Amino acid sequence: MKKKLWGGRFSKETDALVNDFNSSIRFDSRMYQEDIDGSVAHAGMLGRCGIIPQADAELIQKTLLEIKEDIANGTAELSVDAEDIHMNVETLLIARIGDVGKRLHTGRSRNDQVALDIRLYLRSACDEVRALVQSLMDTLLSLAEEHVDTIMPGYTHMQKAQPITFAHHLMAYFEMLKRDEERLSECRKRINVMPLGSGALAGTTYPLDREYVAEQLGFDAVTNNSLDGVSDRDFAIEFCSDLSMLMMHLSRFCEELILWSSHEFSFVEMDDAYSTGSSIMPQKKNPDVAELIRGKTGRVFGDLTTLLTMMKGLPLAYNKDMQEDKEAVFDALDTVLLCLPVFTNMVKTMNVRKDVMLMGAKGGFANATDVADYLVKKGVPFRDSHSIVGQMVAKAISLSKNLDDFTLEEFKECSPLIEDDIYEAISMQTCVGDRKVKGGPAPERVRQEFADGRAYMRARK
Image (cartoon, rainbow, N blue to C red; front, side, top):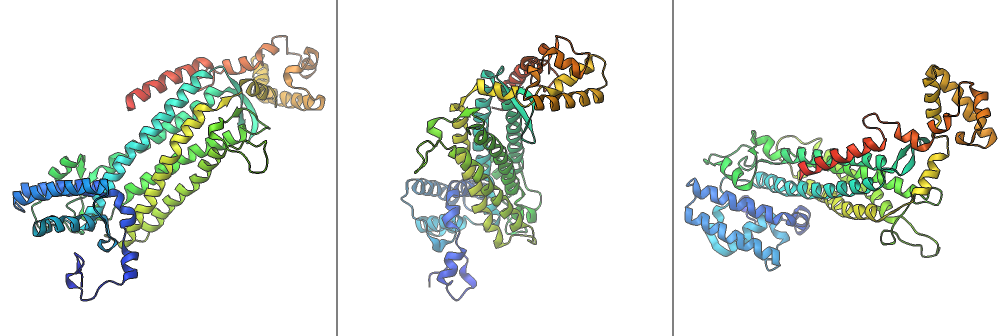
């Protein structure tokens, strides 16, 4: 009978179905570099502390690096029988250097080993996602700078509300992505704490130098409690939560792009390279990329829910349920890494139709608030001016006119305080340009946003 590395107390082989059911190598094999890097650092510490002979530690380290290279080039075969990446690497090590390889697992458990591996993996993942988010932020800044004077309608309840600029709209998403980037940075700090040395749950009697291993692997600190060290997956849940929030922001933007590229809006047109057609309707140009990103958002939400549900009923410390963490977090990561570059290029290449956006702002009484503000400046209390303009809008609807199209006489019928200067006061350019409060859409304010945004990006890279 071929014994498992843990099979000393067993007298019967594991059922073939259970072998496959229990194995995680099909998905955790992607952590082979992290697993080997952790083992190299662990072996070095064992030799340095005199827990194993220094010569053995050096041979283990040398052979592990050879195994890493062989896995990378496909010459080392991983086996389902060895269950997971940890046991696969150890099996390969023992096969190459015999009993010396059996010394590697001294002072550690697969429980703290897997916790180490996934922290190393997600630390790199945070950096990769942040870099892509920063690239998208750069794209939005560049696009916004081109459209500081491009007037468009702003909406509430999907009804035209007030005129803004396309630059101002884009910078709203820049702010969302800024928070996403900051959340990922903060998440990385909580990921970057080393659990190795926690053992199965109660540490070890060996005099391990945990701080040395942490330093070798680039961790900021070591975990304070061995039970928490092996059973904590908060960092993975937080990572998936951050990815879910990021995808929610992409999905909101995609929803707008889908609407804006429709015939009814025609604010933007997607580049041919980021659109598809219909198998039956030759006129169609579908925003499939935006729709797919919107759809994949739910998938990432599902991964987060998987992690939360998996952890919610687990007693301390490690439980096999926690093997389910990796498929969910890997899927969420893969989805985001797939979506971010294509979203960035889709936005970068789309055609913005400034004339249609301006016409959209002029319709729907988007300057009604500015008429009310005009009357307030003439001494009318805001609530009274609100009522006057409400009646004015009702009159405009009955006449099939915009407020801009009223004659001065029609304006005066609503309020005798209105003079010729009303037309300048409620022009789209004035409506936008006079909103100079910090955070407003006035071009001078938005240009300051650009400067602040560029400074932020320089500081974060």
